[in-house]
Image 1 (tube, rainbow over the protein chains, first blue to last red):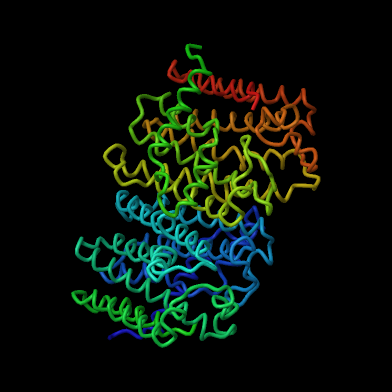
Image 2 (cartoon, rainbow over the protein chains, first blue to last red):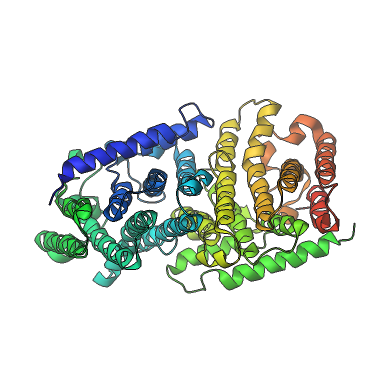
Length: 298
Length: 298
C-alpha cells in the first residue's frame, strides 16, 4: 500500500480540526455558553474518523469539490451530539469522555441537552449551505442531506441507541446485537462514506462497492470498540474502561471470547478491503483505515 | 375578510394530522417504543400553527406544490421535539403538556431525549426526500432545508432556549426579553412562513413582506402566550397555568401589566396584517391567523 496511514490520519485530522476552528461560530458569539459547550465537546481531540471517511471516500473517486469539508464536518457534529446525549445521567451516565469530564458535568444537564440539539441542527445547516451550490449540484446536495438524515435518525443511529438501551440487562441473542450495532454505529459510518462518494460523483457500481466497504468497517469498528472496552485502560480510552461488563451489556467479547472477537474484527477489515479490488491507489487511504480500525488502541 | 378562520384552521389541522398519520412510520415499526413515544407527543392534539403557516403562506402566492405537506410537517416535528426536551427535569421539569402527562413521565427521560433527537432528524429527513425533486427545484429544496436549520438552531430556537434558561431568576431588561422570544419562538415561525413562500415561488418583494408578517406574528404569539399563562386555566391550556410567575420569569405581563401586554399583542397582529396590503384575498387566511393568535384561549 502506498500510503502511511498514521500520517494520513494525522494530516486529515488537522485538516478537519482547522476547518472546524475557522468555521464554527467564533468564541464570544451569543449565546456564549452554548457555543462554549459545543466547542468543549467538539474540539476535545476526537479522532475524526467519520469526516475522514467522507474525505477518503471522495478522494478514492477523484478530486473532491470544495463542499467536502462542511459535509465531512457534519458527520462529526452528529457523532459529537450523540456522545453528549449518551453520556447524560438519563442515558449512560458517564463522567469522562476523551479524557475530560463529560459535557453535562461541566455545563449541566440542560445545557448539554441543548448543545447536542444545536449540534444536530448545525450538521444540517452546514450541509444545506446555499453557497455550496456553486460547487455541487443542488440535487446531489439534497441526496447528501438525505444520507445524513437516514444515517442519524430513527432507522439509523438514534434507532440503534434505543435498541441498545432496551437491551441492557436483557438476554439478547447475537443477531440482535448485530442489529443494534449496525444501526447505532454502522449507519452513520455508512452515510459518511456514501456522502463522500456522492460528492465526487461516484458511478453506481462504485457507490455500491463503497457502501459494502462502509458496512464492513462499521461492523469492524464496533467489534474493535467492544474489545477495547475490555483491553483498554482509562488512560488509553480517555473514558472509564470495562464499563460494558459492569453494566451487564452483551458484547462481541462476551459472546465470542476476546480472541474470537479480535479474529472477527480482522475478518471484517479484510472483507472491507476486498470490496475495493477494482479501485486504484486513490483508495489506499480507505484500505489503510480499515486496518487501522481494528489495530487502534483507542 | 372572505375566510372563516376557525373553519380554515380546523380543516388545515385535519389535513396536517391526516398526512402525519398516513406518513409516520406505522405503529409497530421498530424500534417500536421510540415510534410510540414520538406518536404520543406528536399526535397529542397540537394546534399545528407552524405547518398551517407554511400552508397559508404558500397559498397566499398561488397553488402550492405537492411537497407542501412534508415540508409543513417538518416544522411541527421541530416544535414537538423542542417541547419534549423543554419539559425534561433537566430543563423546565413540566409534568403536563396538551392535557396529558409529558413524554418523559410516560417513557422515561432517556427515551424522551431520544424521541426528541429522532424527531429533529425526521424534520430534515422529510424535507430532503429525494422524490420531492419531481415537484420542486432541488435548489429550492436546499433553501427550505437551510431555513429549517436556521430557524431551529443555535441562532434560532435552540439559541433562544439557552437565553431563556439563563434569564430565569435573573433581572433582565426588556430588550433582552424581546431578544429571547425573537429567537425561541419567532425564528421557527419565521422559517415556517418563509418555507411556504419558497415552495410557491414567491418573488423577492413577496418574500420580504411575508418575512415581516412572520416576525410580527411571532412576537404577537409570544406575548399572547405570556398573557395566557396568567389568564388561562389548566383545563384551557392543557398544562399547568401561572407557572411563569411561580418561576420568577420575566414576561410581557410582568413588564407591561396584563392590559398593556394584551394591547401590545393586538398592535403586533395589526402590523402583521398591514404587511400584506399588496396581497389579494389568497392571503386572507394569513390575516385571519394573525388575529386568531391574539384572540385564542389556548
